[in-house]
Image (cartoon, rainbow, N blue to C red; front, side):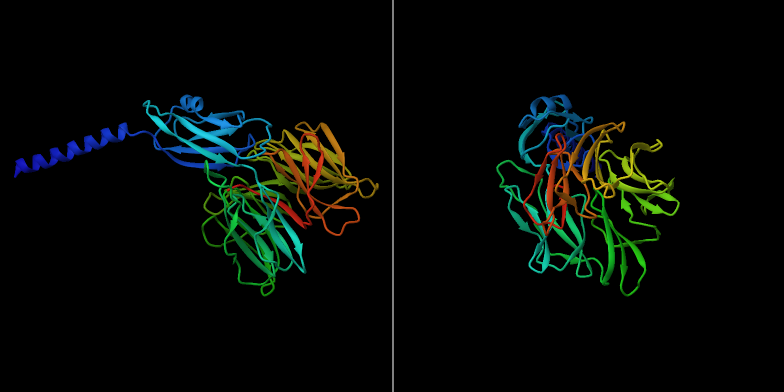
Length: 433
């Protein structure tokens, strides 16, 4: 009996040692590769391996085609590949991943195609209705929904997994399947819509939508039946939650997740979402959130002064707001690069009769460039959006005398306009998924 037990234990120990040796000699594997939102460059990739890698070996053996300037960040596992600087991305990037782990074992080389460029979404008039459409890489326009009634609100989810919209007094979600990363040799595909579904059963009077890079969705809405404002949150992959929050204006989810900006009568407050410790940080004064910067915790605010002037402010964690611009013109929209190294304002001074302008500012508020949009009018409520992968701004403008507005791209380096001949009542970026 004892001898049999010893043999069994010894056999089990020998088997465990053999398995351990086999695992130690097994080459490393790439477990996960995903495109990541970045705050310090045009695009980034996160890589997860089966064991810690030797980063210098990975950096030396891996290749990008075209050879874009990049760096590898992290220690061992996981690692991040970060594209550097202001280099525009004009097409898919071929990526060869190869190198050794810390034991000197080689990773099987893999080739991937990576396209970090966002997609252009528009709400286009079709017949007596409107339709959500997407521009493919070949320039063709592809429908994501059937022809609907008026689309009064539109918000792409920040992770590219879908689009929320309000049409026909209903809040809808259109899930999307897309691949910013695919094995080399695989055919190029555009985002594919799944069956849209209603998120709320009640008919709506209005709804304001917000999302973050995690793919969470926030809706402030009012029902015809209830007649009161309700705030609902749909965390990514979860059901609806109601938030007991009151606001004096539209709330915005923080891009990195975990919190939101709430306008109040006393000013703007920063609050945590449910699941985190309660927090309320207040910035007093008459201010509106204009836009977020890619670098976490940075944003552009518009401050309203008693003499009817307005100023643009850059806010950063632990710092008082920094004034970048002050004037009498109306700020129709703004966007910023990285942590506010450069900012762009869309200004309109209708009282003086001047045309709408795009103004570029440095981090210190120094005017760098100015472009007058002669012959164009900004579509009310349309945002100014920045694409760091191609270094261009997206606006929705109406040519004077034309019935419908259209998307207009503006090169961030020269402020040169590139109108897109497509009727579009709204134009937004859809993040790559």
